[in-house]
Structure formats: structure tokens, C-alpha cells
Length: 224
Image 1: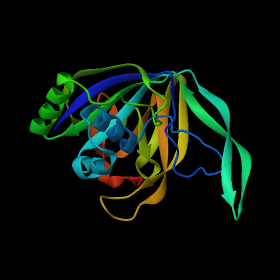
Image 2 (image 1 turned 180 degrees about the vertical axis):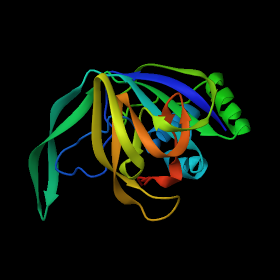
Image 3 (image 1 turned 60 degrees about the vertical axis):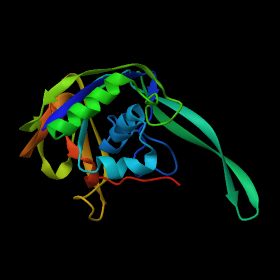
Image 4 (image 1 turned 120 degrees about the horizontal axis):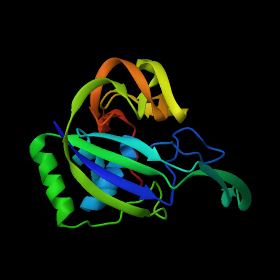
């Protein structure tokens, strides 16, 4: 199996967590669903076709650097019965995050995707919401996929044995809707690590320390 490595940097990014309702919080690192959306933008794939096309591909990301979270507030207009009310809700966004993103699959299909992106991109990728455009992005290379028990991005808590942080490192825990292939998706705590390592009790697919996960293992919402 091969993978495409893509570097991307945003001024701001927001990858909404699956469970927050009263306020907007963001995953520290984009989940495979968000990464698939970024690659689909580059390739010109419509949102309603992303899951069908990419369901058996693997995705992952590593956070290279960022400048913390910022709190913003937004006024929301809600309809209740026959009237509208306003409420103020906070949103937490990432400041200047930089990532390496990966898409992995069989060698032939990965080379085809790589060639299409190099020929020209259809749409500008965005950082979770369509007003968070990148400051910079570039396709780096096609790389080999390996198996490893040590990863530097994220993993479900069910397979994490221990964690180690470098100086200035962080660990963030958040629920993710997760399950095998097309089975029921349930909330599972995921460990997200920045400048550190997660040691697992099983081998997973990896590239440059980034664990890769199949898109069909995650809840993917298609908006009508």
C-alpha cells in the first residue's frame, strides 16, 4: 500500500467534534472524514460521492505546529414554535495549524490520484469550514505505508497502552463516532497527541508516524 503526503497550513481551522451541542469545539487534528473532504476538494469530487469513492481508502494526519486555540462567539438565530430567538454560543478554533495529511490505498489508484492533483486542483481545500482557506498547501510525495505500534497523531482509547510527551507536547481526549466498516458507529474516546507518542497494543497502518484509518470506520454525514 502507498500513500500521498500533503502539507497544508491554515490561518484558522475548525474540525467540529462529534458531541458538542451548546458550543463549538474542534478536534486538534482532522479526522479521516475531514481529510477525505480536503482531498475530494482537490480532485473535484462532490460531497455526496466522497464516501462511495473513498470508503476503502485510509486517511491520517500529523499536527506539525499550531498557536493554540482561540475563543470566538457567534449570535445564533433559532426558531422555536412561532418565533425566533437569539442566543450567543462560543466557538473554539485552531490558530495557524500546520499538518501533514495522508491518503493511502493500492499503488495504482494512489499514483492516479497523485497525477490528477499535479495536473491541477478543482477547488481550494478548507480547514473544516468553507471560510477557513489555507495559507499554503503542496503535495509532497508518494510514500510507503508500514505497520507500527507507535503513532504520533491519534488512536482510539481501546488500543492505547501509554503515552509519552516531548517538551511542549499536549494530549487531548475527545469522543469520535467510530465503528468497523458499515456497522453501528458509537462514541469512542480518542487520544490526540501533539509532539508526543501513543504506544498501542496492536499494529496499525502508519506513514511517518501518522496512524491511518479506513474512512468506512467513521461516521460520515452527507448534507442534503
